[in-house]
Length: 73
Image 1 (cartoon, rainbow, N blue to C red):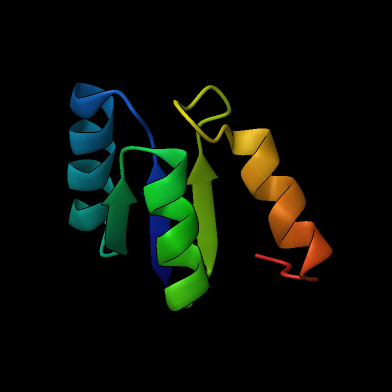
Image 2: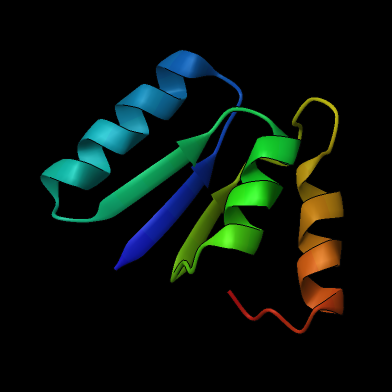
């Protein structure tokens, strides 16, 4: 399973990535909404862990864009 974690808190992002990696998941991470959206558009993910209060482009805006594209991730 391939996971994308979009979280602006560096300590939380690192700790979640570490824990998910230890459980055997492949995890990519982004620290801003723009960076995360670019990764979503370029890659294929089974699951998104999305912070709603991101700088520049917030999590709800990302989710709305994905749903308009019929992306069911």
